[in-house]
Amino acid sequence: MSSNGKKNMTPRDNAKLGLKPPDQDDVIYDWNELKRRGPVIRHQFTLMDETLRDGIQSPSVRNPSIGEKLEIIHLQEACGVDYSDVGLPGAGKQAVDDVTRIVEEIRDCKMRILPNCAARTHVNDVKAVVDITQKTGVPIEICAFIGSSPIRRLVEGWDLKRMSKLVHDAVKLGVDNGNPVSFVTEDTIRSDPKTLAELFKVAIEAGADRLVLCDTVGHATPDGLKNLLDFTGSMLRSWGAEHVKLDWHGHNDRGLSLSLCLSALEFGVDRVHGTCLGVGERVGNASIDMMLINLKLLGYIERDLRPLAAYVKKVSEAYNVPIPYNYPVFGTDAFRTATGVHAAAIVKALSRGEKDLADRVYSSVPAGEFGCRQRVEIGFYSGKSNIQFWLYEHGIEANDARISAIWDFAKSHDATLTDAEILGCLQAEGLIDDATAEAALAPVYAN
Image (cartoon, rainbow, N blue to C red; front, side):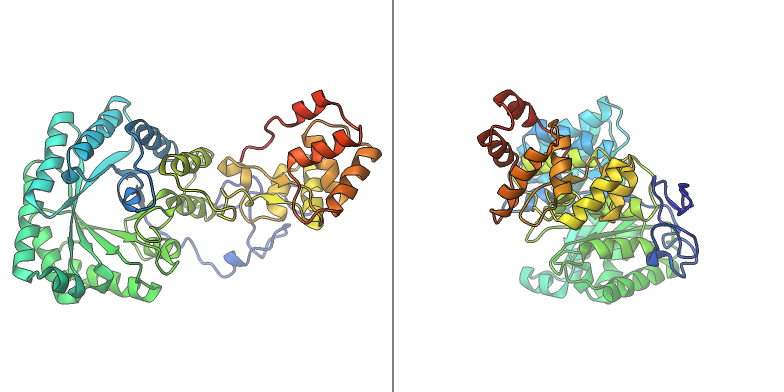
């Protein structure tokens, strides 16, 4: 909203309250736009969700039931995810059964999302995916992987000649059976150029049309990512293989995975990978929910992301992974405040009917666009505006007696009050009856 009361839209996004470049008159001065000469990401890109495969490899998660996995694939579809890694059939019968059922669901529901499967560079793993494709009639992308770093080769006792044969045979088998095949080098970011050049060349000559560059142990920095992409791109051009697409798959051991995914897209990568809530081995993968949010806020996608809250909640429940209270956007405290000054500003915006302002005044993320809402609560650091708004939200008239009772009660406690504590205070003072208290305990907030 501009100072003259008119709402202006930026050319880069569809937010109801758009962020303005710094040379325009607006209520938000956006340093992120200063000196920007155009979009950072200039090409079409896609997103791969690894929640149903890589996410399950965490030793701390529960393997969801097939019913839960089907709910998850539908939520991925609702969030506009392009590809989903639906499992590793080479792991055994249960994996085959689950992958088959998920692929059938995608086929029968005519879903837009495209399935792929991980496979070791072993003919038996590849054949397991081919068999499911032949059974379902769905051309599942095969992501054939092999460890490529010197440290991994030393531990495994592998030599490059043997590795090259495994790669050739696995890729060719998938291609010969009509499956799209991507070649994945585990620990790419710590692999030497000679090994990568040899394995990439073998895979491309065998028919792979995509290379997946991996930061399997979360080692990469932005400089390392750029160096690796420059090397790979130069190689592809020298071979006349510019048609081969590039993916980036990163883990979060240094806490850099999300920023590296965004940088990878800036550097020209065609597809980036992530998992919901960042679930995965060790500290996990790049968070695809945070990726979607940032891509929308940056103006690079326009999809409706209100289903994202339901997706995150479902994965949390199905995987038995609690959402940290301070997790961005979907943590319980993401849009929750009890601080007097903060709450007062939000309440003033809401009282004017300006939900867009309320979403922005103390947040860089508009809660409503992601299936969430602002929450104003009461604690020892709260002002009376908190209390007035809380009473309004819970359907109770905000008279002086009730406000004073809650105010005195809050100032005598050292933590944010629960709804039950506030209502108990009012009941103890004879300021509401049991029926009013019961009605006020009905769910108010979306998250």
